[in-house]
Length: 560
Image (tube, rainbow, N blue to C red):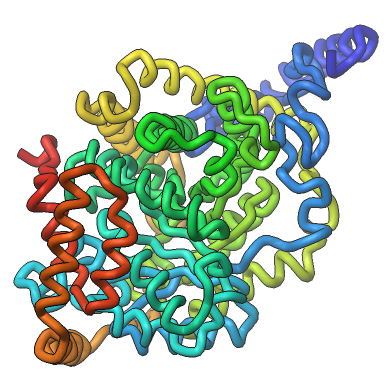
């Protein structure tokens, strides 16, 4: 027991006395609300005491940092040994534009790179595709060929800086470009480090940038895991993402449950399809969570995530390597919490969310810029967002001790409640036959839609407050300079692409694409063939068109 019987008895006596005082106070000073709840609508009690943790066991449920169940962190020394990675999400225009932003951020103290791709690239289309019209370079960087990728990483020491790439359907292609670029620059694959998001299940659930059906999509992911185990040991081949699930309107519990269940699905596929031992690949799995505005709920969610994943890996999959039990994750502050109204308030929201991520023990962090709800972030807004992390790390003292909120009656109780409800979801999905089966039934999609609708109703009824939106509204809007991508960026990108097509070896490209097609049909790992293809200057769409042709294209049943 976490507390002795004497302590619990004393707590009960004090609670009874306090409750009598509360009853008297409420007669003259009533509560501000009839009900208090988190952003996700979990009930919040007036007070938490040792009685709320009477069934807890410190060694079993909380423990020490660096020890099972890793509630308090993977590393024994926390941030005292090493701070989280400052990893700002960046991408705009052509490769040269994003390279310039990367260099600026590295000069200003960023410690890891993160890549945003434009919508055509995310969907596996070249910049001259009719489907790319008006979108080239607008929401991220446009990448069509290896030459674009070489321009993107120009001057970046690939063996010294880790790079995250938020790319999903064409992840095999973009990672192939990264590997090919490293090879061209003389950097061994064993020395490059980074992450491909590469999480297709969350695309079917929430973000909706998909290409092929679920089954072959997961197969391609398992190909990257297998290739990474053999050739790129410092790379995280997948970042299992709850961020976009939360952005779609999910609660904290749903984000946690669906993300971990997606992770289970990927692990099961790699073991079944590739026959790889769990301890050979699990240490390179990574996760990506949202840090929303409800401070304590987010901290509880992140702490619960570590404990749950450790139990899943040990008890469900029999992992033996302690690193297999670690849930390593990147965090991004909540884009959906930002407001176009009174946009400078977003600096405060981001700071609070970043603090929650840090107190929750994140390994890597992106802080949103104040103008992201309006346009691509400006250099100034990005610098303020980066400085937010640096102030947290260097000035506030929050990195001086490990998991400082451990033992809080409220935080531990909230952590336990979030975990218990997340396990309920995982059990329901298991009973459906797994996450792919649940997606095909529309289960997670409908759960998220219901949660989003409920939250919006609460905003409309002013049960939940968004400052500047439904309370403290003003007519005077603060102007924010808008960053816009010139249409000439797309025109120049298309010109370069056509020039590459004219001067490349078309016969070598055709053979490379035929090799990828054969690998898709016979179940062989596509990664070596993708690397060969991009070195021959095959375009992203040409490779993705092979996938679409062999595997078919997915259509969201909810849209038809």
